[in-house]
Image 1 (cartoon, one colour):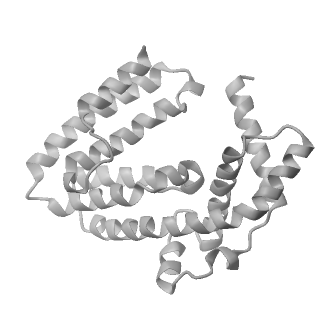
Image 2: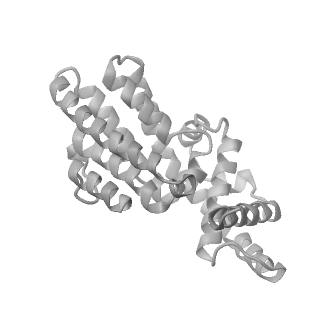
Image 3: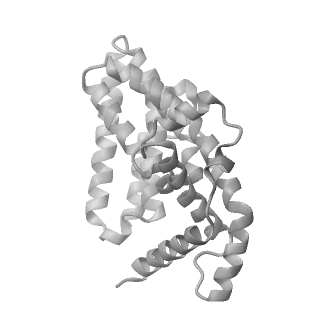
Length: 240
């Protein structure tokens, strides 16, 4: 009914056809993984290892399609895409799987700390963890975002381990986050539904994740300077 919906349907349709045409062997994409890595991968939001691999297949197919011109509209173009996927898909799935190992290892370490943590900070971290790791998170986030997850999770763990000594500083940081999230929520509610998932709007949620690192675990660093003012400025830019 809209150009955005049409584009999404084309992406999803092309991907479904491509995955049906190019199967992936579990043994092939998990070859070389250590028992420790396999154990880490088995504890994931998708369920077992096979479900995680399927999530990675979707993410890899998205990457193949994007790297070679986007959704196709003719049988000839689809045949060409299938040929490319047969040479690339398994390698991409394998690479993404290995990228996920440190994410799930950090998530496990964070969960151990969360199990013995109580209070507003712990509740906030639990909500953050749920927003980063959920069924289908690999395909939803993609490789570019997945690379940052170990740092976000490590920052959350650092935050909890610093308590209760850092309680006052933590509360001040929470006040900053409350203001930023309130502004972001107001932005989302002001936008048409199809606009809320646009790249520039989504990018602000990742700016907030970087802000968390800066507020709670500054020693871990951020790729670019980040502050409450910068996030609010990005929100205002979209409003215009």
